[in-house]
Length: 290
Image 1 (cartoon, rainbow, N blue to C red):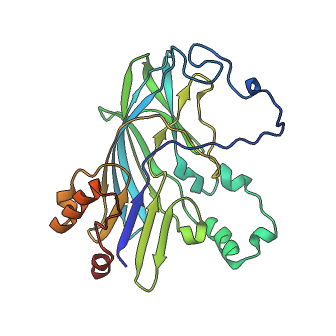
Image 2: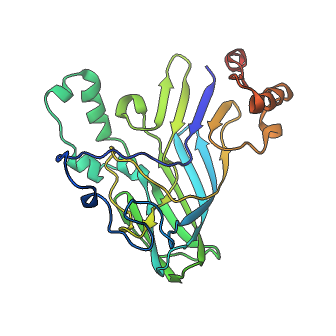
Image 3: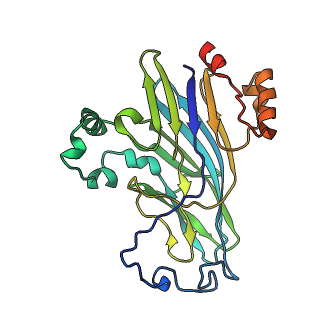
């Protein structure tokens, strides 16, 4: 089996609501109409959305099962409010032993009735998860004050970002990748002992901006594992470094195909761009041979 590495970069989530009263009026559910959204929930004449642009470099350490990364985020304030601080999501911190998810998790005899469940619970008490050695710097390399609160991080700015203004800063981090087969989770690795090989599927692997809107300001509620996110729109420039025997599958547009694909694979890749049928860019036979 060829090593595999999959990353999920960003997107828009869906949210499900539980309504006890089936006859409740909609105005109890929607925010009060204002200049930013009307009574139907549609954008008003002063509606805005914030923007966050990312330049990300991540490296996979296949020997230690770790991700190391750094990013430059440019946050653009399209709201009318001056922002003296920023909130970021640190989704990987849900893997920390003292995370709110672990401290509030409940269980029953039935939920621990299988060997897999018991092993997973014990392994989770040993796993050293979460972001390590976080650094937050301005573009000049000077440290910015920040506070980590569970799965969220607040960065205090040297001066507020006014409407139409922007601020760029850098974040550095690394974390241990969890074993999905033992600990579960939305992402992690799977180990194949007969081949001494790892397959990685990575989501929520980089610190990312929280949403700021007119209804509740910063959406900085703790991540407890079962929630979904909305994210500010933006542009992503992502560089992924992995060992040369890995195949990377990721969302986005590939810019360096000539450096990572053979000539024959490049032709398949070009065909895939216009084909109505699935196209193998790397065939199973090539993967096995590797």
